Length: 143
Image (cartoon, rainbow, N blue to C red; front, side, top):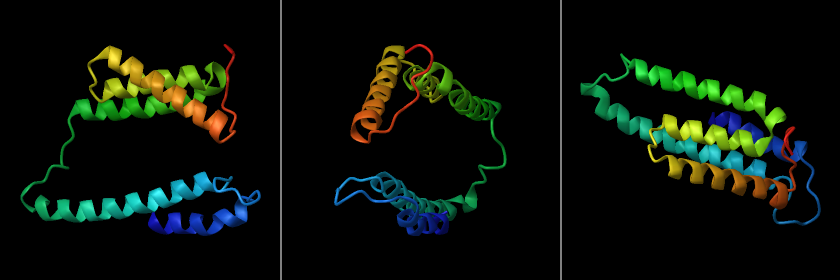
């Protein structure tokens, strides 16, 4: 993954034209994501090395509970549903529902907190993409 990220980092200038001398231009977000991927990969490698040292006496990977498998399947299904529903329902509604499902899968029990955090995240990300980055998001049939 680190090699893939480095290749992307090298290819960004060839794929995305820069507009003027803007500090935050079209290349900013791809650079930010790619550098974040590299940093998280490095952190993951060090975390895995530390876990490997502790794992000698435990073997916790040999069995997953049915509940964990169900959570994984629901998460994958939610991602596929989000991809299919965004063009129809729009970004705001679909992302809010997706966030609520994911938070409930992660065992957030306070439904009011789930609703508020989902709505705030969706509105904030919508504002950042629409206003800050000038990237249009799907509106759907309701708007």
